[in-house]
Length: 277
Ligand code: UTP
Image (cartoon, protein in one colour):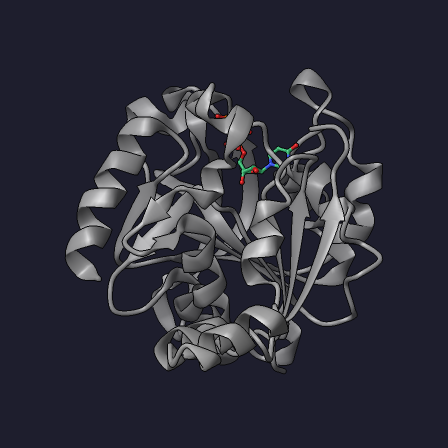
């Protein structure tokens, strides 16, 4: 079954980039000749996703605006003979973009919940903007390949995994692995999830990073998830709730992940992407 929908929750306040983020969403910071958010959208388009929903907050309208078709601008550029620019702008013409608002920041799960009415019955990709992956195959591509190797009965959710050093377990959801899938040692059946454990309580060294493939049922249980620390609804809690109802796998992605959500990580991404583009 083809995965055609993706949700990109980008409604966060971006406190680690303040005061910059008072005026410009961190997702609009440039990497190479494109904003960070365009790298995520391209990751979606490269795997054939055709429908993308941004979850934004007030003041972040520049994110959907970047992808909006502007026929008058395209005409003007054509008149001026700037056909390469027209081609660049037309790149998004066949994508169906949709935007919803998260009025208050009550967590990543709460952000996804705002897109519930837009979501269909198929599997949905979720991409969190802070995590970017470099390498020959994007994280999403690797996960979709893994998903396609699963039988119908095995298809539930897949989360992206990365090896996390013990000193960082407090920042990640850490998985408890049941078994490896015969198709690939990178694909692991998950039997438990622990949010941000102390290293001694981490059930493995594999942490969840910013890509997910989830069925509609995970979104449906989000309202039932108890609000955790700071009154947040977390996607990981919805997955935990689904552990006994659907198969949940983790895919240990290859390639380098960069966390662009803080200034040092962003600086690293700038150095990598300016060389690559
Ligand atoms: P973060 O936890 O990094 O929060 O969110 P943030 O606001 O982006 O940045 P800091 O921590 O204040 O510096 C991870 C991802 O989840 C989204 C964010 O936009 C980011 O892509 N998110 C988080 C929401 O969309 N809504 C929320 O309520 C929380």
